Length: 98
Image 1 (cartoon, rainbow, N blue to C red):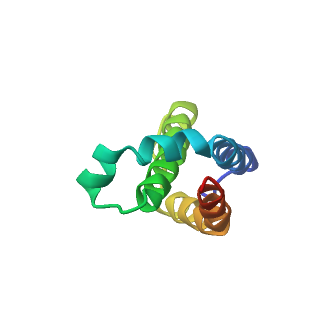
Image 2 (tube, rainbow, N blue to C red; image 1 turned 90 degrees about the horizontal axis):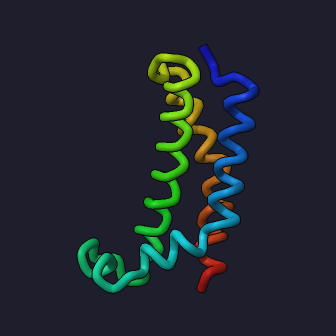
């Protein structure tokens, strides 16, 4: 079973929202104590990880609530492919934060 049109739109909306609000993610990830803990020189890698994790968690939890089940293997693969198509935009938004 593939992701529905609703799921795809929701995922797009979550990614758009994260891109529009990326500055708060970057500010959090660039805290000196976190950069030091994760050995992340400029906070970019941690910012990207936090952004993708937030999107993934919100989507997966919403999916489980709506469908009363976990994503199956095909849906997970589609979710990761979807991230791949939008990853460049997320990275660019982080870079624009300076």
